[in-house]
Image 1 (cartoon, rainbow, N blue to C red):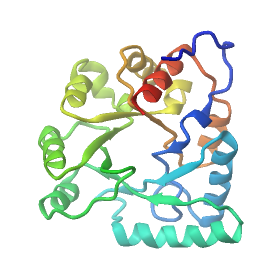
Image 2: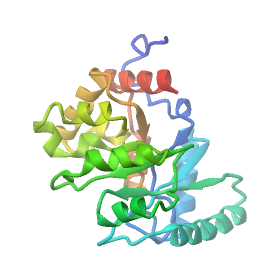
Image 3: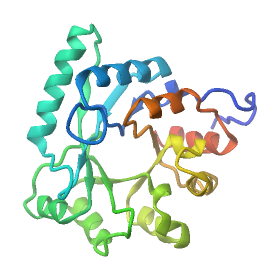
Length: 242
């Protein structure tokens, strides 16, 4: 096992070691991420400059806000692919989704609809920032019964888990991969989220790191991201798992 602790303090984060960004909102015009293909191209170029080689578009699928489905996601991807070709960028974008655990997602599971995956059988899910769904454990179990590997998006950002110390451990023990946002380690979402991310890293609970990129402000913050001790621990855990 390699270590990051003999590195120069506050050196730039080595994005190239991750290679793939599994959580981003770079598909144009279908959620609160990139509004158009031109912006998507600019964001992708920025991610390439950071060191990423592969990209997964994960637009929100939310019953009450972003009513995306496989058709709308693939249509957006088609627009982006045409722009990538025109810009002479030879990169493939994997179409996936960030599914909110809501009534719509439960219906997809009941109907055994084929879910979009970020990798192999991995499905990215999120929950409400107000309160966790009471049926979360049942949803996780049903996903596993259908052959999916649940990936829990940005758990460090849910304030109610900051008070329930064992909550994330229970979710992880139920079979979820925990995906932290890189910018959480930069304090982008505030000091409470930073502390939660660092605690997860120290306790070896970070399974996946991703950008959750929505816009140029996120890209600019990623360009300034430094490799802290805790982020090094998180990266070491992710690389060991890969």
